[in-house]
Structure formats: structure tokens, C-alpha cells
Amino acid sequence: MRFIFISILLLVSSTVFSQKNNGKLDDNKDINQTKTLKISADSLKANPPELIDHNNAKLIDSLWLATLKESSLGDDFQFVDPEEDISDTINSELTTELLKERLAHLNSTTPFNVEYNSSLERLIKHYLKTRKKTMGILMGRAEYYFPMFEEHLDKHNIPMEIKYLAIVESALRPTARSRVGASGLWQFMYYTGKQFDLEVNSYVDERHDPLRATEAACKFLSQLYNTFDDWDLALAAYNSGPGNVSKAIRRSGGSRNYWNIRHNLPRETAGYLPAFYATLYLMEYAKEHDIVPQKFFTNRFETDTIVVKQQITFDQINKVLNTDDELLEHLNPQYKLKIIPYVKEKNYTLRLPVHLIGKFVSNEEQIYAYAKEDLAKREKQLPKFQTSPDKIRYRVRNGDYLGKIAQRYGVGVSQIKRWNGLRSNNLRIGQRLTIYPKNYKTASSSSNKTTTESTSKSTPKGSYTTYTVKKGDSLWIISKKFPKVSVEQIKNWNNIWSVKNLKPGTKLKIYKS
Image (cartoon, rainbow, N blue to C red; front, top):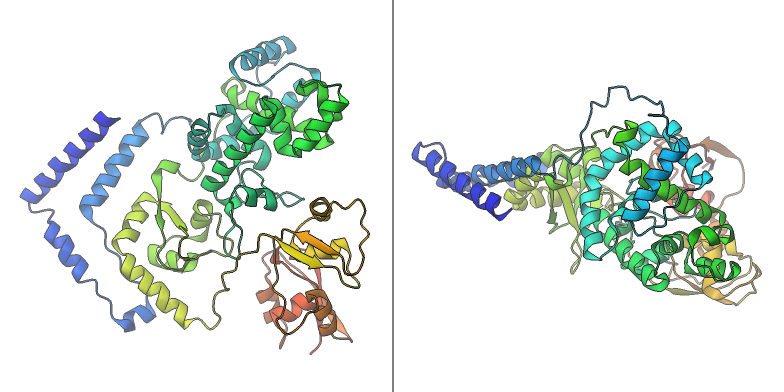
């Protein structure tokens, strides 16, 4: 690799020298070009700045990327045209004997107990029948994420096969969310994420940050392996918690073999390891089953990051760099509001294709000036940056019940019960509860009443119109359809504490003014 890099530098040096001698490249011209990029206040108000790029730096980028593409990093997967039909027929009559032979091979080359059983055979054949094309799509996504996974797994001395766990958890979708609130590639619950320094605030959900979430998952899995000294049990604990695995071991007479304790695990966890094994088999034997990867966006090594020095929005980046939301959301899924905040002592980054990172770096001053000017022109200012507190003490009031409290703070009823050692759903007025909130709503300083109580008082009586939420609707869009109705009124009338409650088909009450 060192030899390749030195060769590149020599090639760049000779190319630059040759171009200078031919009068085709002049560093002074680059400097003069930069000097002439002084933008007047009037032009900033109207248009994004014109961007320059430095030809010598651009050449280095292109040569380095060409080298990476020619290396093994670029050909881990052979892609096909997405339009090409992929057969859904099970390949080569996967017999029980052949499957046993392949599973025995996986068992001998991994630290997992990949044992043959009839239920695993049925699951693998079901996947081959129903998910063959899906596996091709997942292999395409894997080309982007797996190199980064492998780097972190190697750093923490974790088996490389664990990378397939993210397929089971999230189908390699960084913003995936489960019905119980787990989120991200590695499906962290809010409080578990906080344990591993994954920040969630009004702008950012680091459970969606592929890099930070992968590091957190590696730390968590390492802790679980140190506890159980067995990777099968560590994965089971990752899914259902160490306590459930410990109880299953006790109920199985002390057995520590996953297959022996499986019947005593929660139903979801009982199916979790077989799904992982089936995915492991299909990914390792994809070629034998004619599973063909499909291209997905770009290679991760073709992107780079820059730490932002000022708050900037996706919209502003799009206008300046001629990008679009789909690209920015794919590369920067952690930014919930399509806004990258700037906070002292925080390193919030923007990931872009390498050639756009070069333009951004070359024009930082002008880009930030444009973003600042654009923000000043807005009628409606951007939401205030707010971080949820780690823990609060909540006093139960008249009319409270666990479901209402859980909804207000964006947590589960079972979590509140676990945090406070509650065995039933019964509460008493004045009781103090410890809560680790997800969606914290700051109460009005002029009132000690709960948000729920204030809302009930602000809800008008009388006739109202029922509005059915459509795909693509937002509270702001809906408010514009009704004269003199604000977003806050709609939220108060319908007990909406989070925009995630706004799903297509939801019925909203809109009271007449």
C-alpha cells in the first residue's frame, strides 16, 4: 500500500510539473481565482456562491480513488444491472445432506454453534424461496457498510461474522425503527444508546449514525461476551437482555448451549439466532444459490467527512453543491431535521462524495456566509437545539397513568416499571418516578401543571372537522389547509407530542375558529 501511495505521489508530481511547463496549470492562477471570489452582500442575498475547485487537489483525489477502485476494496462484490431479472428458483436442489455439509463447514470456521436442525433447514429454504432478490439488495447495501463494520469488529477483536447481525436487526437501514422504539443499524433502545454515549437531541439521533452506532454495538457485544463467554449467548442477550438469557439457563438446568435453552427464551429471541444463522449461510453461499448483489449508491471509500463550523441545512447544501436530499440523507442519516447543528465541543460532521468535499473545503468561507445570510432571511427560525436530560424525577398527579406518562416522555410503560421496580400499573398521587426521557418537553415556568393538563384546558368545545393524514403530510402542511389554525393548536387538540405520531390514516380533530 505504501508503494502504491508513493507511486501516486510521483505520478501527481510529474503530472503537475508537466502541466506547469506547458502552461496548463498555474498555482498562482488558483490563488488569483480564490482572491476574485469575494462576494458582495447583495449577491449573497440572492444566490448561492459560485464555487471554485483546485485542480491539483482534484487530480490527487481522482488518482487515489482510481487506485482504491482497482484494489480489492472495489471488487468485493460483482454487481449486475438492477433491471436484469434475477431467478427466484431455488438453486441446485439444496438437499439435507448438502446443507449439513455446508453448516458443518461454517461451524468449523466460526465461533458460533452452527448446528443443523430441521427448523433451521426450513428457514433457510424459506429465505431462498421468498427473499432471494431481497438478499441481492442487502448484499449491495453491505458493500457500503461492511468495510466499516469489519474495521470496528477487528478493533474490538469480535468475530467478523457479526457484521451479518445488522442485516437481521435493520436490513442495513440506518433509520430503521422497531415497534418498541429500537432504532438504527444496530437497533439501540434509547436508554441503551445513552449507556454507550449515543446522543439523542432535537437535531441529532446518533443511533442513526453508522460510525458511532457501530462503535457502540461493538462495545456492547464485547461486554456481553465477557459476561457469557459464548458468542451465541451474547447474541441472544443482545436481543432480549442478559437477564432473560440468565433465566433461560436456570430453567434449563444450567445448560449454556443456545439450542438447549432456546425453548426457555422469549419467543422473539428463540427465532433470533436461527435468523442470524440463516443469513450467515445465505451470505456465505450466495454464489452457490445464484444470489446476485445489486449496486447501492456508492462505495464508502468514495466519501469523506468534514466537521461543520457553523449550523447549515441540507437545503442550503443542496443549493450550493447541487446535491439532493436523497444523497444527503443516505450519507448523513443521523440528522433528524435535515439540519447539521454547530455546538461548541461537539464534532458534528457532514459526509459527502470526495469530489464535493473538495469543493466544500475550497469554498468554506463563502458557503457559511451564504448559509448565515439565508438563515437571516427566514420568516420562521430553525428549531432551538435542545438535549434531553439524562434523568428526571416525575411526581404523579391526579389523572396520571403509566401510558400517559410514557407517551409524554417517549418511553415504554415496561421501561418505567423496570426503572422504578413497579410490579403493577397502579400509581398513587404524589408518587415519585425516575424516568430516562427520550422526548422531553420543558414545562412552562409559570405553571406547575403538566403539559397534559394544560392541553386539556386549551382544547375548545364545540364542532370540529376530522382530517385524515395523508402520505407526505406534516403538521405545518395541514395547518395551512385551515385558516387561522396553528401547528401548536393541532398538536394540543390531538395530544401529539412527537411528529412520529403523525402517520398516514391518523384522524385529527380540527376545531372551528
